[in-house]
Length: 224
Length: 241
Ligand SMILES: Nc1ncnc2c1ncn2[C@@H]1O[C@H](COP(=O)(O)OP(=O)(O)OP(=O)(O)O)[C@@H](O)[C@H]1O
Ligand SMILES: [Mg+2]
Image 1 (cartoon, rainbow over the protein chains, first blue to last red):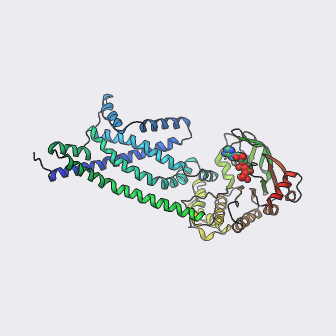
Image 2: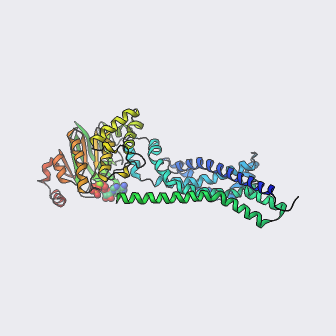
Image 3: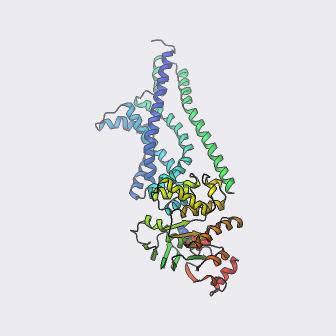
């Protein structure tokens, strides 16, 4: 094997970046659905549901993502489930992301003034109607900047999937390095690729935050 | 026939007793002004009528609904009761028209074109026919409050509750909101309004209920504002004017 960095290595790294993107999207979609369920559960009228969901959030937030990866990849097979590295990584990320997004979204929902709930209640709207037609549309605006900001964390955290043998960008870098031993060059390239994935997202997040606070200022100026 | 009856209603928040046995009634078509010092329990009484708060004991009947009954269908109660708040509470993500159509369309299942017609009608009534596509943040406080009244009217309630709906407004904007309420009173709407506008209360209310320390201290026709029977009401009236 050639010991210099060649276009095949680069292509391999780019493939890895693509899988990082795929895993990030899986994490975002799965974690988004789970996160919505978590947010609803955290504010559910039923005490039992609230306690169970709060327990889930505390448990997940108190566990390193790396350990969640180990539990799903090495633990689940001992229970008789055979799972691929990709499934293990996707499931772990979903669990992890759902707890964090769920909390971000619960905060956003709770920051919609109580009076909005009451106004909707006085119009005889059902709880579901109040939630979907009045509260969530307002909460989504509040939640968008932190959600996009958290997406950067999701992308970076997919690198932990390398430990369960999923060949995403970090793992791809390790594999290339194993064959040509140029860690400085290779990991700089890997870092550069992560930056290319994350930068547009963090740019978007910063822009959303700016327009969000400009909007809030305008509102204040109007009501003053 | 009474549309709203409160009978010995008691309500505490934790250790704080707020209503110590409140009783009053409002007949169909009557306009009642609920007055009293800050903290006397006016808002709480109003909120109990719409079951935004549950009472500890006593009885509340609204349009035939036993409001304190835990098994009450809240939806039916709220179809009969309209409520307008001091802080307007319009939905900021919807236009004025959408704000008004939301209840009729999603709760009463009225078809959109028809609901649009209702919106146009109530907006004309409050003098906001040209604000259909505006968002709440683009309106003045007085306009927002009139839109909130229109939103409530669009549900065709049998009784309307107003909680200090002009307290956040300057005198000019207060005037335009009061004119809308006065017009509503003329059309025979049953209303309970918490207000600090004594002149307005005297002019349009059929009945004045004065609350003091969680109780109805004095009640009667508008004349009790000019000739109070109790020293508490006398003090209150002279402070308000
Ligand atoms: N949710 C609540 N929890 C605890 N205490 C409350 C709550 N709502 C009202 N209170 C208390 O009940 C008392 C009566 O309040 P209420 O708002 O009914 O008075 P009010 O007559 O409407 O006064 P204002 O003219 O200032 O609006 C006050 O002492 C208030 O602090
Ligand atoms: Mg009050």
